[in-house]
Image 1 (cartoon, rainbow, N blue to C red):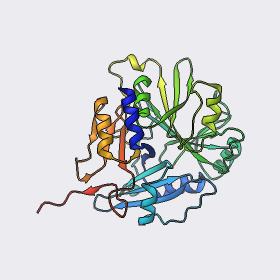
Image 2: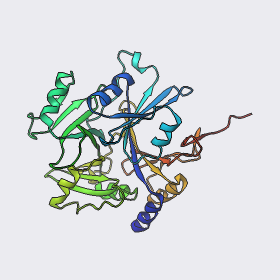
Image 3: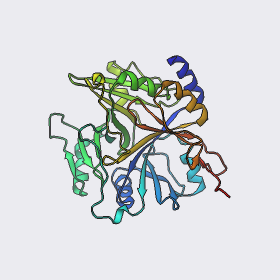
Length: 340
């Protein structure tokens, strides 16, 4: 059954494309990721009728110059066909002017979302620069038991890990977007689910009370070493695109009633979903249906037709978007005509 799913996944060309975070003030959040961490704003999509705007940012290779204007048809076409993984910042109108408003950044009891991360060559030098720029730290490189890595807070309090990339990586960027971390209850369910979405487990790291699994949508023609090999660590740290880091705290898999907060209900709303591009949304949903984890929205549901939200084994939302969209402007949905 699993190998049948993998065969279908290969034909649909699943490609991880986004991690969505809700933000209070997009001016502050976009500036943080763009000006301090080297991300590029590649597109902006306004939904005035529904009172929200989406901002898509990613780290592009140093030699890839982005000349498109966010919000244009050309930028939309780039976004919905890109092989890069973006951070999608969702701004619901009015939150920026509500003094006491804040989203839940995760990392409290039973929270599922952990952090996003960037890699760099020199964690200490980068953290010194970030501190001078007024960035607040959860953990500085020399604090705690794990030396040489850091966690900073973005404007909404989401954790951003600062990690040293591998030696001789060949990456010229100061920073590259390198991780989204989610906690999972049972990796024996979560890993096959994401492998069925075309991802490869490229590294695993086991400790006494928790394990880490790193998955990626690998560039075409790239073969990873065995995930438990010595070579896997260097391969993972030198990868330019980000990995999906699944963190398993040992024992949760045997707790029948245990569930992580997935970020889409109050009072823990903050992280929203991860998203994938596919060639055929209906076929992708048909592929996932037999796994039995369910859907938040099927392609024909709701006002925005043609895109879907599946649930993974922990109930995290997984958006499924048609690569290249449905029209000449690469719109990845269509709106149901108003009733006459």
